Amino acid sequence: MHRPEEINGGGTATADPGLDATFDVGYVTRVEGEGSLRLRVVGGEVTEARLSIFEAPRYFERLVVGRTPDEVLDIVSRICGICPIAYQMTAVRAFEHAFGVTVDPEVAALRRLFYAAEWIQSHALHVYLLHAPDFLGYPSAVAMAADHRDLVERGLRLKRVGNEIMALLGGRAIHPVSIRVGGFSRVPRPAELAPVRRSLDAALDDALATVETVASLDAPDFARDRPLVALRDANAYPYADGRLVSTAGLDLAPDRWDDAFAEEQHEGSNALHARTHDGGIYLLGPSARVTLDAGQLHPLAADALARHGFGERIRTNPYWSIAARAVELVQAVADARDVIDAYRTPAEPRVAWSPRPARAAWSTEAPRGVIFHHYEVDERGLIAAAQIVPPTSQNQGAIEQDLREFAPRVLGLPRDEATLRLEQLIRSYDPCISCATHFLDVRIEAEP
Amino acid sequence: MTPLAVARPGRLAVRPSDPAAAPTTTLIVCGSADRADDGAALAALAALDRATLAGVRVHAVGEVRVEELVDAAALGPVVIADAAVGIGAGVVAVIPFERLGAFVRSIHVRSTHELPIADAVALAEMLIGRTIEGAIVVIGAGDVRHGGQLSAPVRAALPRFARTIARVALTVAERPGPRGPGRWAERPWSE
Image (tube, each protein chain N blue to C red):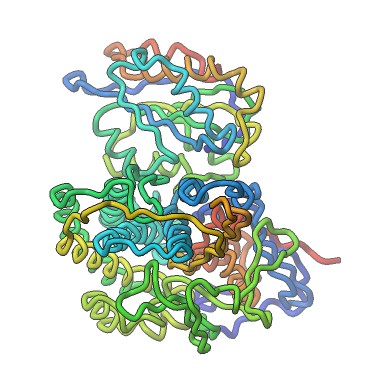
């Protein structure tokens, strides 16, 4: 029987060498969407770890065929209730790049504010309501709130600010409707942003307090070494622009994701997995961004990162993704303040454009990592084919690989405890299974 | 969409409220109109004469967020209308919040919401320091595929679903007697 301290220890614990079992978690909780985990163990060795995604397959790549680029923006926002802006921003940048559209700099700045708002609400949700209970030893945010009401209230305050900005710029907080090719259907007057700007001052205090709270947490020692992939923008911390780079030396234009990566079908999952062309597994998300783009962090976020020496832990240990999200909360809030302070109403909310037959492709940084869209636009200006690659399906290989490595530490524990430990690891990646279906159910079966 | 198990007959219970307050009921309508039966609550709202809901704040949202529940509960009772899996397609059920936690504890928690609906309600109640008066009105979903239309059983049950949403939204705020339950409590929870 393993004790918790062994699990959190040096990584030497192993399953009973005589253990033959299949471990199933029917529904993984506190993740977005529906999925399950099955571990097959033979002779104490985990021979298979499968994160099965069985939420109803989503046919968005087919739904957009025959639609106009602006219609695509409205459709793809429906893929996810947590990160609709990521889908819209990736599609709109793909079309604008393909059609040679240059937006007004103030519109570009507003889009940065829009994307930052999504990061704020998504990261606040994950840090406080989904992930913090794991670190503090509670089964849920509800149970945690009984003892740490202040934490939950802080998380909800941050979330509200993100919601507020998204609703203001997007027309509504969920599935926004304002982004158009060439700009926005409507842009706010500076006076309309004033209440949000006031909220952001308090949000910055909350974001900085989040970093301090996260610094006080203790995470299992589980060092990994794999390529990290993110965008790198020469001018700023990356949201919707920059080149695809990796810790392994990758450097690609944001429309050339498929030059290095490809999707493949995996049995038991409605999501496609992504690999490098030579079959390599890689990791996206806040940890990758903070590692690869530390030099572009806002001074307040850079100071928060340096003050606690999070850098190496974020690079190597998936559990410390919570620290990366905390640093990015500071980044996004500070960015949002800066955008509003410098904002001047653009002459026109959007510029005119004309469609043309083109390959329209782009990558942006969703809260959970790089998202890639590729559309083929025909001579009528309608979509002929589409490929949408969300971050979770790209991270799925890394999640399964880490589960195979981590599982032997917990398989000797009672079933409920083992399930909890495995779910905690999965939650470290903040999988958005709704996006990838493209959820979680953990199963261990006895082998004959 | 809210995943539920099979609804069982029961009775609603209304908790006493502050007689000095003038509560406003908030109706939170959840779902995605482009995901077949997941859009049933939105379709039911569209079918209702808004005059029927006079005095009720109506919010159409994709999913319930804790912060919205906290805001709404500060004003008065809350009614959530949503589609659900785990009950038969077209079956309409009313589940008071006070029974929601016990109800979902017996089933797998599956949810397309940020937090499972019972967790969202429980968390909101903890934050405001009291129970939230209200209920969730659900209709069993048969088909939730993107791009699909309402299934036949849900389409047929839509008028009843709309009437139930309106009735619960309008009666949940009615004052109970000083010691006894109000009219709302006299209705069976499974329609």
